[in-house]
Amino acid sequence: MLEFEEFFQEPIRIPPSRSHDHSIILKVGTSSISVCPYRYPYYQKSEIKKLIKELLAMGTIRPNQRPFSLPILLVGKADGSWRMCVDYHALDKETVKDNFPILVVEELLDKLHGSQMFF
Image (cartoon, rainbow, N blue to C red; front, side, top):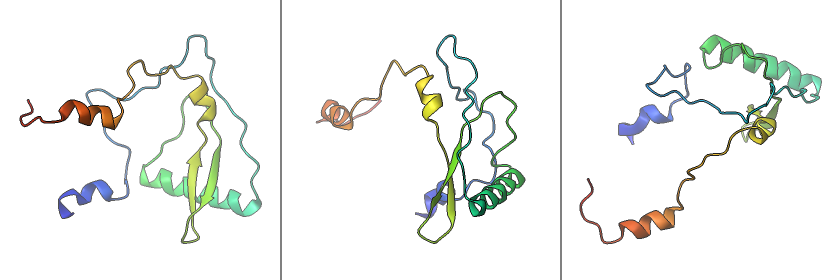
């Protein structure tokens, strides 16, 4: 387990740029997606502000520079704290779907059955 310990640590910053950064491709003619925020009780508003301030300070998130907005919501965790979640439903509706879906695991294992060498 110690071998993979770095993968299970809390993120401390946004990952560096890679040779191929992920991008979201929108359908042709899609204007910016801007969804109204949800209504929150006062205690959740203060918690949201606190979480955002912490995430900005850690460098895990950065201010948005684009005309997009998606609502967030808080989900209670077992220890009584909150987890911030982003509602991506509006963005998902306008995203170009992947032309090459991932195969079902059972199909992949069937193809590998009896194999002894992998190149």
